[in-house]
Amino acid sequence: MIVKTDNPRYHRDTFSNAIIATDQQILLKHRQKVKQTNITKSNENEINTLRTEVNNIKNDINKILELLSKDKDGNI
Image (cartoon, rainbow, N blue to C red; front, side, top):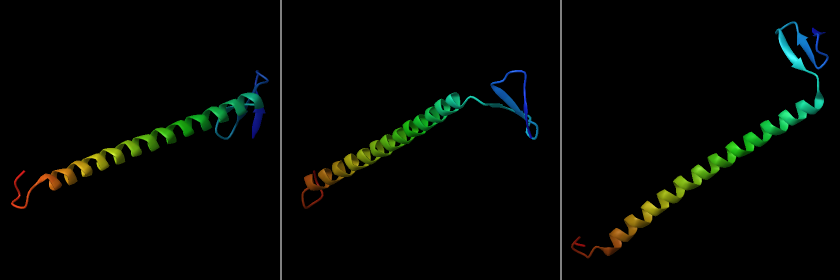
C-alpha cells in the first residue's frame, strides 16, 4: 500500500518501506539518464571489442608477413 508522507513530492510503499518520488518530470529525467548511461556503456563495450579485433588482425598480418618473408629452407 502507498501512503503519503510529510513531503507531497514523496510517498511511502508500506510493503517495502521504500520512499517513492511522485514528480513525473524527475522520473523522466532519471530514465533518460539511465538510458544514456546504458548507451554509453554499450558503445564502450563495442569499441573495446573492435580494438581487440583490430589487434588480432594486426597480429595475424604480422605472422603472415613473417611467413612470406621466409625462403624455402625456412631461413629469413
